[in-house]
Image: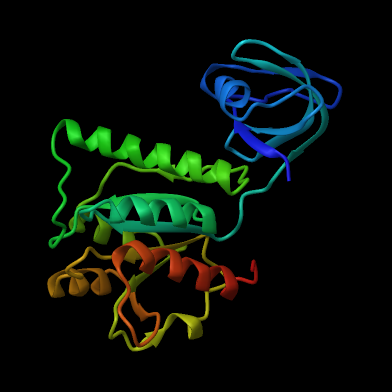
Length: 247
């Protein structure tokens, strides 16, 4: 499968056009990946538009691509959102990377009560940007035409408020002792978004569970073992992809 590179826009690009790849992506293609004239590449705007073509010209840190195919991948419905609690040791970043490869559509950092890691002040945008960069690189690795959005971090109060504010959203909270197995949960046919909430290393606080359930969330479990925060979300997303018939 041809390598995927991301560009800002592909508006109006059609078969027969020649489009440039420059900047950081062009430099990586030429200097790191050692792309050569005649190779086939794919370009995407990260929002579903994809063009495939042949490299016709190389510069020092750029190339030109003759477009042979152009298409738009429709956004999946329902969309999948991961609410990932901030965690220490880079475990939250590991979750972001794997979740992107598995197909998550939106990622929301959560400052949970038991989160050891904290984003304050300048760390807020720095952390969000870091997660967004990880999602972008993981999308390229997975040859995904849609890069998941990474929202600003939310508090438990904000998370509970959003959970109960929209009837087209189904909210699931991972709980090792939840009564409902995720593999048996029936996705509603009328929801536009499924939100999966994953706690930090120390688990979700009891008051947080109460608040989310009161807002309409469902406590679900994966199995009989307890997974790390870095693997719980991706594992649950894989189950959801199967339940939705996408895998």
